[in-house]
Amino acid sequence: MKTNAGTVKADTFEMDYFCFGSGGAPFVILPGLSVQSVMGAADAVAAEYELLAKDYRIYVFDRRSALPPEYSIRDMAADTAKAMQLLGLRDVCLFGASQGGMIAMVIAAEYPQLVKKLILGSTSSHVREKDYKAVENWIRLAQEKDPEGLYLSFGKAIYPPEVFEQYKGALIAAAGAVTDRDLERFILLAGALRGFDFTAELGKISCPVLAIGVFEDEVLDSDATMEIAENLDWRDDFRLYMYIGYGHAAFDTAPDYRERILAFLRQ
Image (tube, rainbow, N blue to C red):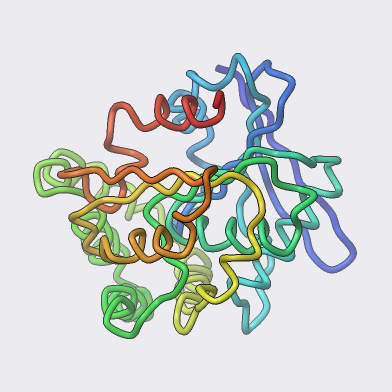
């Protein structure tokens, strides 16, 4: 499937994105924390979301190109919302995975005119110190300029053991292309997770919400999705689904993940 890449140029930042799909309705994906930019995975993402491409025009946003010394999740949300506005996007179906889910929930709460429906995948409304331990280790590996160790630690945390073994060679190969700039960028983006807490503001989200979690989440813990549910499950337009056995990156490993998203969008 053909993808088209572009760059949004705002007054204070630039942000890369790519899009694909022939549908008229906008669907926006905010990916999670990654060692390298999502822009290099455009074709793979398009193949994964082919099921939605007939009904939606799908936009995938990277983080801003030049990162300031301090860059919070709320800053990421403000920049992404601005990029969406500059592209004329509104009433979008917004899907955020992991750190992207944190950004997505802030956008849905603070910019309600932009979001028609919200899907949160393997994410949390707050990051506790115990949940930050894995991230601290990743930051250490990046600071030590050990991309292979970083990729392997990252992959082992987000994938089930059998999937990690299957992807291990690809992760090692990907590590060979990591630059010092990639590592510096990763350190800043990973550091933004520390202290994030949006739980008290979840009630500001007014659109329908689907939260998808995993019971064996080794990164943010399954309790994170359940706590989002505890704050929103009183609403008739809230839906929850919990996977078993697919790891934190269920959005990549669960074969019916896109079907669940599409079913929610069609409700």
